[in-house]
Amino acid sequence: MKDFFKDLWENNKRTIIEVLVMIILFVWALTSMQRCSTMKLEYNTAQNNIVALTDSIEYYETKTGELVAQKTILTGEIKDLKESHAKELNNLYNNLNSMKRKNAQMAAQIKGLIDNPVRDTVWKYDSVKFAQSLVQPFDFSDKWRTLSGNITLKDDTMGLNIKEDKVFFDYTVAVEDGLVYIKSNNPYVKYNAITAIQEQKKPKRWNIGFQAGFGFQYGMFSKNVDAGPYLGVGVSYGFGF
Image 1 (cartoon, helix red, strand yellow):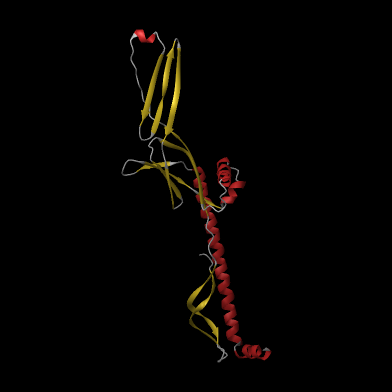
Image 2: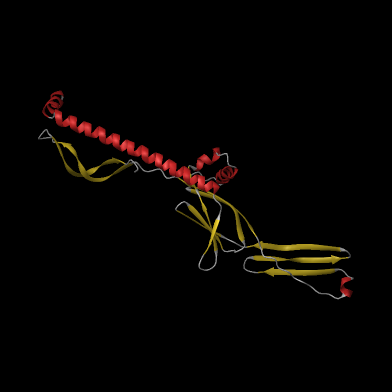
């Protein structure tokens, strides 16, 4: 075996040196490109997160007249929310943790209110009825709200008893290109705050599969190092550019 490597070196010394130099230069170039790519990704992530923390909720109207809220979302590791100094991000982490979800790819916290329109109802009575105790039931219902109860009048006291008060709404959430879009079927839903983060996907480096390309190979019979195209099965490492 020792003689084999000695003969290989003596017969292909210059070619082996050239190949090694080319491999070193190639690895150095790829490493430099990967470092630049990582720095660019970190810079873009930081810029995106600055926007996500400072921009406001924007609305646009669909063709059917429904309002859709949109907000830039954070990008990063969800577990890092625990160490954040921002109260909203800590709350998001705590809420996610209380749900016992450790591998979520995206998390969002939505705060809002339902600003129902004012509706007036008037009852008219003659002066004789006002001298007596009065119980007036009310019952309102539409596709977004059910409200029912009684209003009581006795002497100089008015009482309000609510038997049922239900508000109906749902959320539809979509994430696309760093933005979260939220729509509710209830037009009176208003969003006070939207805090969301999307897990930054780590590139898959190692892969096994078919390969085709150009490279250097050692001839077992010719005992020479030759360059040329090849086709085969092997393990590859991606630098994530």
